[in-house]
Length: 470
Image (tube, rainbow, N blue to C red; front, side):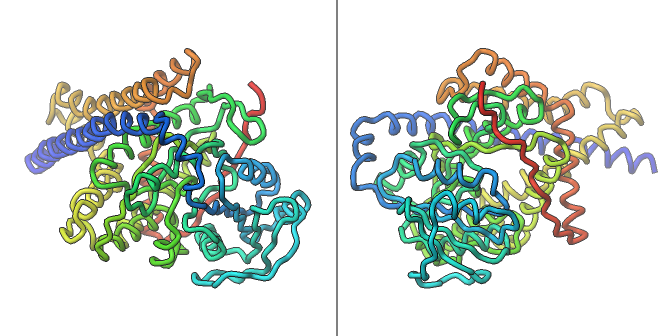
């Protein structure tokens, strides 16, 4: 019996060690690939000729879709900020998804809404729409009042009503920088075939906000939102930028992403009933493009920025991470036919396998690593140098990548100007592996149990609001 356990522990530990080396080496490759991407995107953003083009009539018009459910406190300020963006031709489509508070009344009072008959074909099936409203004071604003069926259904109602060839989906509480639309449109203006593009989402907690705009980025002093700043930098600055060089991203944030309306209609819009509608949409869109031999691609653009409030307490954060991972599991299972399928090129042979084995199964592998290493050390089957090597690969490599993400931020966009903010970023990059990482593993493991039990709870995001002054 002991001999069998010894073989399992030894071979298991070596297999897990090789897994962590391979996974973190792939992340390191993404980091390397992100460096020329940052240089190229920065060069385009600062090109004078291109800047003049971005201010011309050549810019295609855009519809901004804003699903809203019980957002009465912030909806007026949010819509006002969206109506003040620096872009020549666009419309704001607010979809009131059956709110039970005064969301619709607040919009009606603030923008002098009047009911108007629908003047568009209904292509995507949605929950019944009660009314359409236009504004007497803001010609760019359209408000849709419909029965509640979730964010995906609300976005489909917005796609039906949108007049323009491109749509951008944002959350009602997202703070979009004034020139973000101009920057987001850059790949669409370079002559390439673009189906969608994602922008950067940053953490608004701790920042100074005036008139629903971030006027002074700051790194939060509180640990939970502060460590999430490092996570977002790591995910966006080298994670998604690196994927630009490897065939495109699988994730375009639901809080800030632009799509060709024609392609969204082709794939029948967002799928209702899924936990992470943005991931599912991107996979279906990439699958559709590949099936139809389309050359359109889906890049990530780092400099258009939206700011969002992240969870500041463990209860809300745990629900969010469990929900995200549950959605990842469901999406990977639904589209399992793509994995290792050469018909789908890099999507099937690289992107999907990475998300299955490098993202979805990562918490399972890490927990197995902890258990096998503890058993091995306790029974004297492995020595301390091997255990230290395991934890170095599991934690040290990830810590190094986090520090590199902070370095990329400092040498490229450098949004955080204060020395104290840089110090906190470095501190959080070092500290996240001691406690925080292990809790995220637990929360993601709970997602497997939720999927097994077919538990469909969503959970709510308890927001504390943005800082109004320094």
